[in-house]
Image (cartoon, rainbow, N blue to C red; front, side):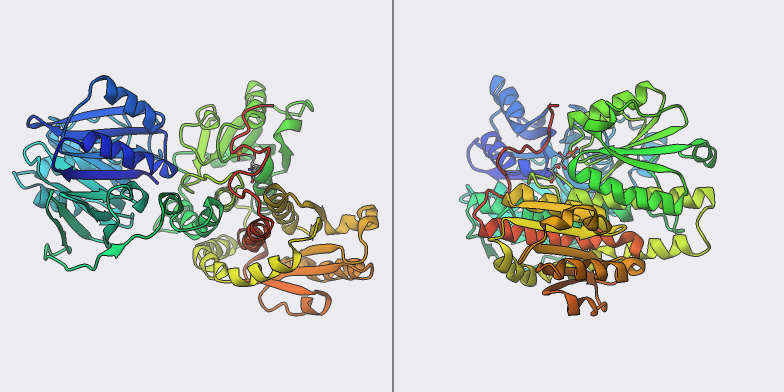
Length: 610
Ligand code: AGP
């Protein structure tokens, strides 16, 4: 998820206005940035690594005045953060410049063709650069035509803004499955991937639809369909303030990111599935021989990531039959773990900068383990120091409380486990297809589940004054109980506590008294009856119980004061759905308690200290 901005107008304010706009898009990605400005018959391009402020400082040292330009703030997916990989990208002679948000799925074959047939030399590792060369290839003095001709070669998701040195008074943009808007200013016009970039200068905007091309000059915005016919579009008047706009109209980044989960899960899943139902591990070569040599797997992480590890253990042992242990990183490195060159060390981290996790990785690597990481931030320390990286494509996660990173981490763990099982031949007939079909349905099931938010808001109103909450579960629900408890405690500051339901009787049940609140997860079909008995246990001691079960398991209503249902799905993958009501419950409880939801006290988004 990157941020793009285009501006054209009177005067020479393009540099400042584009930088302003990019700063407002930093929540979409901030590992590198760049700008291209029309100046003296050419396109002046400046790029830098890091935050927008670095680009601003670079430009301040040699200011370029211009009336038109395009800018970009990057969230790396292909190619680590670097000056070469930063946008804008240009064609060979620099006469065309583009900025791109999205992913060009067939970039490898296009790159190969451009090199082999047209002798193009590439400067970056990105997918985006192929668009610059293609537009350059088809350019014959008409940028609009060249952009449309090039787009016909692209597959994937993209919103692209393009400029030509020979046409300094226009910018052309095209959109497919990645957001793009156009803004009407005073003697100036804008393009952007999102509203916050424009708010300081324009509140009247056009929402550009798929397969549409936009041509902007200082006086006009023209929108065309894929047959190059001009289309009429109603304007949209933005009433949000800038802060609300960065959150896409949501009150908090956390809620925005909860609602981004269907897209994040779809993105992380679908681009790994090939047309024959196989799983692509993005260049991770885990051959059958490699897998047969593995005698033990450690999954090591912290916090939410470690809870994803528990689901990963469940799946790997079930599908690939390889002994798998989950450990929290801060303990792993000090317990002298048994590691050798037949150990696979799987490290999960959203930020890729958590020091405990990084230190555990280094420990494992130094003792001969193969390191495979599941990471959300491209080019992060964990990613760079791993032998293999399996990226979650959740996009930037801004809220301290991790949500969309968790569900996309689960997707990666399930894909890995299925891949291993299929490669080793340890999956019973039809199991691979069955579970993969369950995963394919997850984006829609998540969307349907999010529609139940009003029910969770109502439950939150009943429980937000509690100062103590217990989460219980069995099997695959234990990890989700831990995650639900962590969500609640870290943003509402309620003392919540998660425990395997079977453990209650070994001590913890002493704490259950009249009106104790217990959230009981009962999604595991084969453990459902046992969980019902655990509910009986706590009810007998006066507890109030909120049950969480698959749709149709209405028996739980007899023992519970409230029941939250998730769409029916296979036991192996219930965590993807079961966590969502708990995320929403935690969010609404914290909101009712007036807590700082996106930046809870004492917490940081990446814990880079021991
Ligand atoms: C989760 O909501 C917390 N923010 C925290 O537990 C987090 O998951 C943990 O610090 C690990 O972070 P990482 O995934 O970036 O390594």
